Amino acid sequence: MAAPSFPAASPADPLYGAPVIDPGETSAAIGDRLAGGLLAPAGRGWRIAAAGAAALSLACAGLQWALSRSFLDEAGAGWWIGLAAGCLMISGLLLLAGVAWGCGIGRLTQTAALLCAALAALHPGAVDPMTLAGLLAASLGLWTVALLPDLAVLRDRLAGQPGTLRARLYRLAAAGWHGSALQWLVWGRASRGLALLGIVAAVAVLTDLALSVALRFDRHDTLRPVALVVEAVLSGAGLTAALAVALRRILGLDGLVTGRHLDILGRLILAFGLAALYCHVTESVTALLYGDAAERTALSEKLLGDEAPAFRTLMIAGLLPTQLFWIGAVRRNAPALGLIGAVVAAGLRADHGAVAPADATANGLADVLTGAAAFLGPLGLFVLGLLLIVRLVPPVSIAETRQLALAVNVRAAPDMLERFAPSRAGFGAVFTSEAGLAEAARGLSVLDRPPRFDAFGPVPLPEAAAALHRDERALSRLALLGAVLGAGLFLAVQGAMAGPRDGAVAAFSWAMLTIPACSAAVLGGGFGIATALALALRTGRPEGAPPAGLGGYFVLTILSPVGALDPAALARRLHGLPPSAGRPLAIYGPGLSEARR
Image 1 (cartoon, one colour):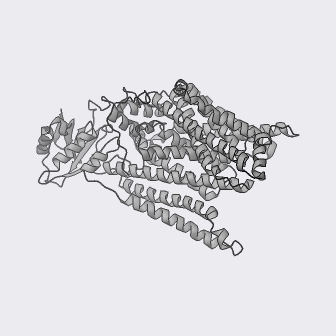
Image 2 (cartoon, one colour; image 1 turned 120 degrees about the vertical axis):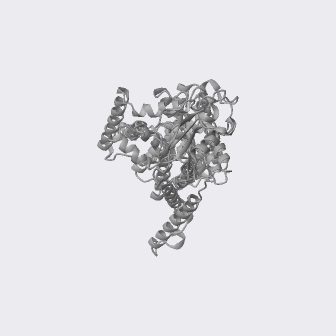
Image 3 (cartoon, rainbow, N blue to C red; image 1 turned 45 degrees about the horizontal axis):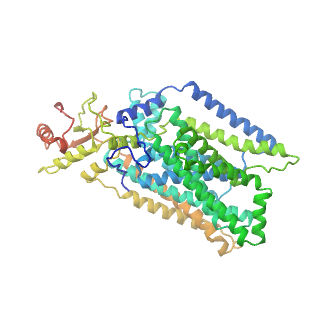
């Protein structure tokens, strides 16, 4: 599972008609905008929004407690589970596919998945606790690991303020990240491993939710699990579209979240909206033409009975608006995309029975107020959590967008060297691209007594890792071992807890055991991946690491035993390389004056 490598191609694509990243974006500009915006003081608008979200949550919680003696409803749990699973599946598929445009919305989907999973965990249990724990752990693990390189950027930005709370926080959170080729390699594999585990956890929790619905209504519909998965991805895409449009506008991220992202999200909503409509229409037609009396009664209840308001809300707000994206102008219009995405995501809540019946009863107004509070209260918590997160971490991945900019923008690479303090511990060569670094490493490796190399950079370094023969196989083994141990431990505990009245069939049926066991395997696999990543980060800053001021460049460090390295001869050899074969931008080392091209 190597790190993604974006092809060097024109940023414009005739299919979508817009660049995947603005042609003027550079590596330095991306870091300045995303990191600088976080480190600047919070504005008045952010404070007002955070206070409003907190006040809304408290007011809704108080109202719901006064009316129903509870803060959260069980019906809302299914909606938040669907949102979390949908966002996690989108994020996981983007990472596994390695698509170039995924870096613009990947962090948004990961953040939304984490917040929605946390809110689902606060609701009364609608699924097995193990499947919900697997969903929450996978969301948290993927979000945390994906943040590591960006946290190191923020840590380095605050290097001149070591005593501040934020500097200490980012230094601790970066966990010893220094951007070596081996760390990038392990990071890429860990991200993809957690993405795969996240997809498994999402499917497991949605299957568990479908089984709980079937048991509650005593109806086993084969389309229900499929419809839940489709609607989960649809709601996740709608939420992502709303967040992308809002943050793009508020934070000025037009160059990183471009019109192409909006067009792709619109197409995704359209495709899954069609699939969800197919599931519901097929279910209704099959019950009408081939169903028994019970199925036709259930269909009549859904169309004309107590479930009719929820069904109409689902169709009018959750599914039919997706068909507006057949129109290209609507699909590529940012306000329209954000509004429709939000309406679709909210409308799909009706499929979990969250809409109050339309017929008036003695408690009709109280029911409506309780339902509104149960919807708006957790929504306020979601907005509050999102506002806090965007003040702590970048809403778009710095590392991935830098990699994309270097791949598709001609002027993305730095063209002048910043001032830096030369290192006393080693000898190094500074490059503007990974390709130059890798070519230089290959050129120096043919020496009779080649020195020891290491590579550092601001983005993943798959080519440099291959040139330096870096590899790491412990992660896959630890992930597999952790998954097996997690599932095995869960099965052993369940077997020990199964009483004689449960019976072997009930205690070990697939519905009651297999799905939670998959989630236990996700927990164990995630623990194994975290262990492998911790081993790669445990050494801290290595000997000969690049000096301060070179965080945005590609650096080849050269270390050899005392007396085995002739710095002047090595510098002459590096400067003698042709420009296309890795000539450095600068060379530094003990007793060696800085040399520039």
